[in-house]
Structure formats: C-alpha cells, structure tokens
Image 1 (cartoon, rainbow, N blue to C red):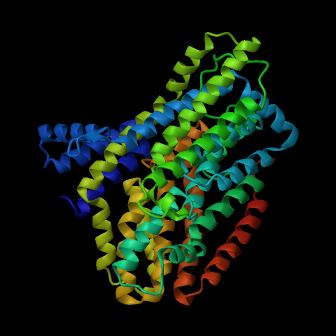
Image 2: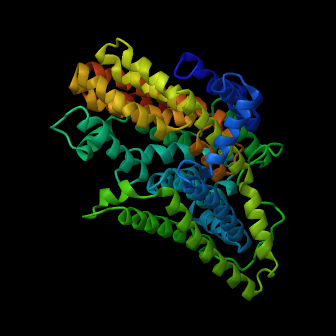
Image 3: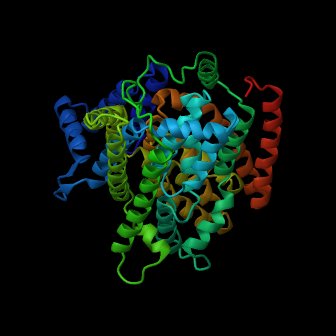
Length: 522
C-alpha cells in the first residue's frame, strides 16, 4: 500500500478523529495503529515491532548507532522552558511585567498588536518564536482578557510565515540550500543563484502576506468567527481565558508562590538570555560545521537549530536560577521554591511532550507509507494548464503539509518536483511555483493538528491544542482563499505586483466587512 492512494488513510483518519472527538492523543494513536498495520501488511506482531522501532528511533538511531539529538534537544528544551517559566512566575517577573505593560498598553487591541509585532521581530526560528513570544505576551494578554485561543492564533500566524521569507533564519537557510542543489543545479538553470531566487520568491509568497494582514485586521477589529467567538466571549464575560475542563500545555500550577519584590527584569533578562543564547549557539554550531570561508548564509545553512535551542535554553536557565536566588536572598520567597519550580515547570510541559512524541511517530510512519511521495507524483504526472500551476501547487502543498504535519518535509519533497515541472513546461513559471510550494506548506502546517509548530504555538500560548487548531482554521482558510485568487492572477498575467494587489484589495474588502459586523467591543 506504500505510495498509493491508500497511504492517505492514516493521516486523514487521524485528522477526522481530532475534529470529531477533540482528543488529540487518542486520534493520533488511532492514526499510528492504522499506519503501522498497513506497513505491516496487517500482521499485528509486525505492527507492534514497527511502532516500537519508530518510537525507539525518536531517541536512538540503530543504523548509525547514535542518539537522535535533534528530538532529544527539542524535548529537553521544552522542559527547560517550562522551568524558566515557573521561575519567572515565582520571582514575580510576570506580574511586574503585566503591571508595567498596563501603563503602556491601554487596550486589548494593543496587547494583541504587541504579540503580532513580537512574532514578526523574533524571526530566527519558528520553535523559538512560538515559545518566546508566548512567554512575553501572555502576562499582557491575560491582563486584558484575551483568550488563549486568540493568543495561540496570533503566535502561530506570525512565526512560520516570517521564518519562511527570512534568509537569515533556520528555515531560509534550508530553503536556499534546497533551491540551489535540487532545483537550480539539477535543472541546469544558469541565470539564477539560490539566494537571488529566494529573494525574488519573497513577494510571491502570497499566503504569508495574507496571513499577516489577517492577523492585524483580526487584532484591530476583534473579528471572531467560528469557534473563536465562544472563546473570546467566555474570556470577556467570565475572565476564563481557556476551557478549564480541557488539558492545557504549558500552564503552570496556580499554587506556585510569587515574590512581591519582583521586577520587570525578572522576566526580561531570562528572555534576553534565551534570545542571545540561541542566536549565539546558532552562529557557533553553523560556523563550526563550515570548512573554509565562513559567510552569514553559510552559518545559517549549517546551523543546528535544536542544539542551539538546547544550549540557549541552558544559558537562560542559569540566568533564571541567579534571579530566583536573588529573590530568595531578599526574602521575597522561601528557599523551598526551587524544587517546586523544577517540578511544576516540568509538569507544565508534559502534555506538549506527549503530543509531540505521538506526532513524530505518526509522521515517521506516514513517511514510510510514502504519502507525500504519492501526492507529489500526482502533481508531476498531471496535465495542468501552466497559468493555473501556482494555484494548484499551493493547494497540493497545503494538503501535503496537512496530511504529513510537516512544512519542512513538504517543501523538501515538492520544491524539486515543482522545479522539474516548470523546467519541462515553461521556465518563466519557476519562481511562482517555488513560492507556491513554500506558501502552501505554511498554510497546511497552520491547519494540521499533527504539526509540531502548531503544537508548540499551543504550548507557548497555554492553549488546549485542539482548541487552537479549530479556532485558527477559519482564518487560515480565508487567507488561503485570498492567496489562491492571487496565484491565479499571477499565473495568468505573470505579474507579481498584480498578485499582491489582488491580495491587498481582497483584504480591504474583508476589512470593511469586519468593521460592519464587528462582534465584540475592544
């Protein structure tokens, strides 16, 4: 069943179950069993062995006989971040920052704009973006009764979209490498370099601009559609920022003591240390992997983002420890809070870790089934009108990312194929179809309950994961619909400017619609 239409069954089954049951671990578990059964030719014993090997492979590579440090670093970083968050809360940093922000940010709208702007500014890595922005913004949005679902949407819709168009990000470096090796060299394209192709692709990534404009329109008009309306109404009317009956990753125990002598620095300095530590570690790991001349692009292309998160997290944890002991010495809190902070911080991240482990397992099994390869083959073998190719590639990339839960896997798979199709038909369509792959990968990632970036956005916001997926979906679909129209115009006219103009005009109309039917006062 590998590489056939049947390979779509496990991801589609998992996604449908998530929507119907709202129980993410159960749904992912069913998807894992279905994928493993198909790979094992419905032999139960072989199925168990396959699942065991896949789970073991998350931590240890039997073939290479070495630890899978990428996954281990990510999981340890989550625990470190949970502990840092607990220490920030204990030292009074979160409360002090919220009190300060209230004097500077006077409205709910301002708190949402703060989140959106931070999401754009912190563009180095999507994992870091989602978690760091959540830590900074949550005290402010909580103060103004912004629901955690809205916060998760703002975080998710400004992290990956910015990373995918930034050449000095972990995403940008990988994409430039793929374009250079698997598109330009393989198709013998001589009038483009990888970096120039990437820079020209940026304005063609219409979903990025659609998603970002949507974020600011939603923040300004407070337009709540679908399930988001219920979350925002509950937050405004009762002060409950999330459904207390549902599991919320990244949420600390209310029983943690809080120092009355805390300052803004108790929040700011750990975040600054995290930012400096991660950026420094990215530069160090990237430069260490280069043989010969060291360049900025080379550094980010060869960096190890997971190791950088781990080392940067350790540095920030040390800073948090120092600040916590400072509060203990001042008598703000007792010395027994250290162990409580370690325990509660770790516990707060366990739901996110469980979901990530399940998501990584099903993604590995889906890869074994060749789901992405099957979808890619359908694109390559189809007889598509060239003018509609960017729009169709966008949809295919979106569905691939939705089904596989990985935007990186999607553009790694589809960029070479899109390049091959363009080179064989009309090379002038090359850059638009490459842009459509990247845009569709981010869109599908936004909609997928098995996406790691979506999971981490839920964690950063302290929002139930399925609530985040379902509340973000309508906004992502509207942004995608506008992007599709823009890609059709771009394909028909060959003009990037006209494609962008269509997006802008569409959102002017949407903005007036939001204003006319605004549901909740700011």
